[in-house]
Length: 47
View 1 (cartoon, rainbow, N blue to C red):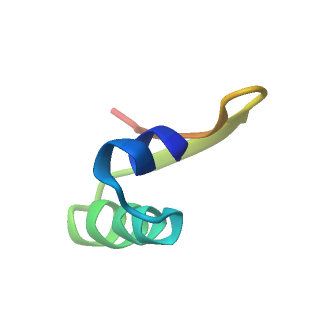
View 2: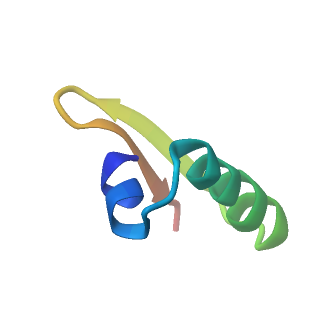
């Protein structure tokens, strides 16, 4: 999340909204997330 926020200059709640709204609902993509120690939460588009 921090990497996306830094790259886009968006707030975390905006990023989460884009992931859940645009990617999951509108495009029908499957998004997985996991919390990695020392890095935080990561999101991936499942293939």
